[in-house]
Image 1 (cartoon, helix red, strand yellow):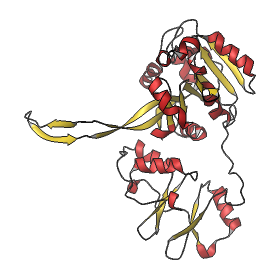
Image 2: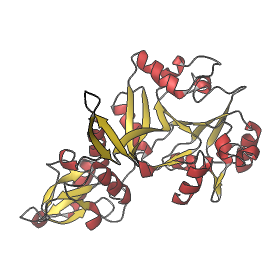
Image 3: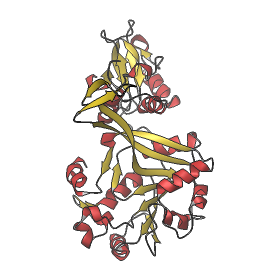
Image 4: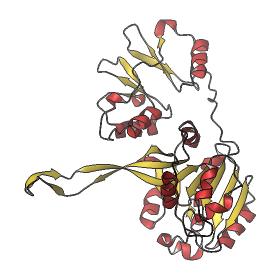
Length: 348
C-alpha cells in the first residue's frame, strides 16, 4: 500500500504526481500511526487548484475527511462490490477498530473485472492539422507536421488512439499545408473510424477553420492541436465540461518555473527589501486541448485569420462560461519543436 498512502505534509504538486503514478485513481491520507484521515482523488485536487490553492501548498485542505470505509470485521466481498458500484468509487479503504488502514478494495480486485468506463461514444474530435510546423524542420519540409513519426507511428495516430480508446470514431482534420499528403496517408491507412477533412484554402489561424463545422456538430466536441499528447482521462474532461455548464473548457498543465537567480524585492521607497534566492513560480499553461459547445462556433468570423485565444476572449466578452481543467505537467507531452520532441518522445 506504500504507493497509495500519503501524509498531509505533501504538496498538491507531489500528490498530483503520486496519483499519476498509481493506477488506483485514489490516495489514502494517513497519519504517523497509519490511521486513516481521508481519501484524495484527482477531482479533489482539481477543486483545490481552481479554488486558488497553490501547487506548493500541502493537501491538508484538499482531501475528503469523511470517506466511505469498510470495517475489517464487517468485510463482505459482495457488499463491498455493491458499495463501489453504487457510489461510483475507485477505492474503499478497509480499517480496523482503531481506524488503521489494513487493506483496500477496488473494482478490479473484486474478481478481476474491469470497472465500467465512461465512453465518449459519438463525441466528435477536431484536430487542427493545417500548420506548417516550422519548428520541426527539416522533417516538415517534406511531411506535414501531424505525420512526423514517433516510434512506429506518426504523431496524429498517437493522438487519435487516445480518443478511440474511449469510443470516439468521428474525426475532423483541418488541413492546409501539404494537405494532399495528409489525405493520401489516411486513404492508405483505411482506419476503422471516420475521417472528414476540412480544407483551408489559406491559413486561418488556430481557430478560423472551425467555422466550417458550424451546423455539423450538435453536442460538445473536442478540439486539439496536432503536436500535443495529453495523458489524461478524456471522459473526465468531458464530464467536467458538461457538469460545470461551460461553453469552452481548456485543459491546462501545472508547470513550475525556477528563476536561476536571486530576485530583488523593493520596498515603497525603492530600497531593497529582501532577496528571494532562486524563487519558484507555478503557472497553469494552456496545453492546446479544448472542449467547445457547438454554438460557440458562430462567434468565429467567416474566412478570417482567427486564433483560439481570440475565440476564448470573444466568448468571455459575450458572457460565455470558460472552464479550466488542470492536469499534472507530466501528463502533457508537447512535441511542437525539436527540443521537446527529443525530450518527450521516449515518454510514449
